[in-house]
Length: 254
Image (spheres, one colour):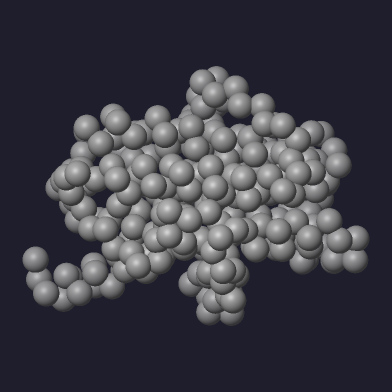
């Protein structure tokens, strides 16, 4: 491989650039939209001027290219040790997923917030609840949430984070709407009503899965076998993220 491309690959792979790819985020947004109350749907329609949750679910990634929004970059993840619980970890001065989700909820529930601010934070919230349910967004700082664990996916260079973000989903060759419809048939995960204290429990539960994923790479040449062994986990987390997002939105707007 040309040394220039090696350098570019290593640079890009070293950054926490990824979340669920567009398909994954849209699946979560679509499942949420199908499971919110009518009152919640009406309020969201007003704020987003008719845009769907699937449509806005990628907004927080899209604004990464605009340096005016750099402050929100650390809100996409929580880096902490695999053997720690979230509350045992000193909070980041720059914010993290837990802080971000709570901030979005606060803005949306505040009657004094204007429509523009509420719409902005609603778009962020849809994305960040999705990010939370990608377990490598709760990975180790030393490897940037497995962005620095380099692997091959069907012979192409990538990293473990990207495999979980998008490679397995893209290999499945299903649109977000098809996948959202199918997952609701498979996983009838009617989550209980959301309470603010649930968020820490979600983080620690998902972090248990993060530990399993870190241990799952015995061979760096990944393909059919890895997809077979792990894709059900991807699907279950997309489904759970969608249903939980619906409950968070119902908590805000009801």
